[in-house]
Image (cartoon, rainbow, N blue to C red; front, side, top):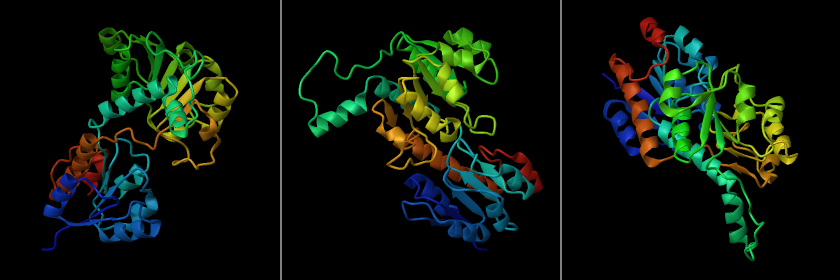
Length: 329
């Protein structure tokens, strides 16, 4: 009997590839750029499983292309807004993600963006390398203090909580706004609840976004929300790019409505080199590296591989997001 066929849309860490290659006919897209739409549609019809990333659109067309054969789409991410889960469920295709793996690593990056933006680290590094830093001056590269400041967490999930814990180590005051209030975490960590977004934004010197992308959170932070913030405030986004209206953010920083921003995710992604946000010295942009440590990316890939293997064996999947699809399948 031939082994089930799996298509991975990116080269994976060795441990994950070895797991899949031991039990499946594994094909790995070798290029650094993502496979074309035509390639994805073709492989969906030829494969039992797809291992995708957030850049790969798992929409209804793709899932229909796999009708009758495709059993599982394993997304290499916690989020899965790139997958049409409703269509997958209707077609009996399991969808999985990689939760409880990258929270601490992403929180490290979020706090790094707070620090890098507030203390103007990338700007200073660029000037040193270009020979523009000539002498020390009391007013050169003056940034914002982090210790003792107020941080607002928007979306107190696991990543948001990890950011809050790091902030407490800097003697920050932490408030939060989330879909549900979490009194146990308030008591344990001394967090302050804000019942609406505006109150959280108004209180903060720093705002860190940790909400999933959904129709309700698309452009959650726009012109009106930015105008509520303090003129000295810094906005950090490590969730999904479309949660923030980037043109409204550009105008807010340009006009001094807020002081700066640190972005690991943008809309579009990547930002074109001529995007106006990149002209602002107090805006720091990184290339979606929230989970980019060797240990975490390996753990994510291994979890995605284990989801695929469990589904193909008919065993419980570690992190299936649509269990109904398994019953239909």
